[in-house]
Length: 100
Image (tube, helix red, strand yellow):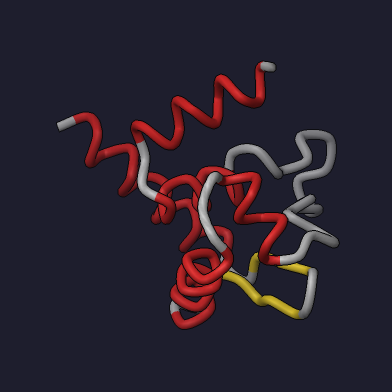
């Protein structure tokens, strides 16, 4: 039930790109190990899309943007961060745009 509430809030307030950024950065970093990032592992693009309330095509487009910016590396069902600072910068830009 809580996931449904959070998803409804996210869908109404954030774009898909913002929701993906939020999930890559804020929700998937392992706080016990600063060098290990537990991302959206072993999930298909369709499954990620369902988690974020969108369709596979949109997720593929946004993941491609992250790859082109050298933020992530995407191999099959595994997503890994290549540059945590760029991802943090993307996240900060999203937060700054809402605080204005």
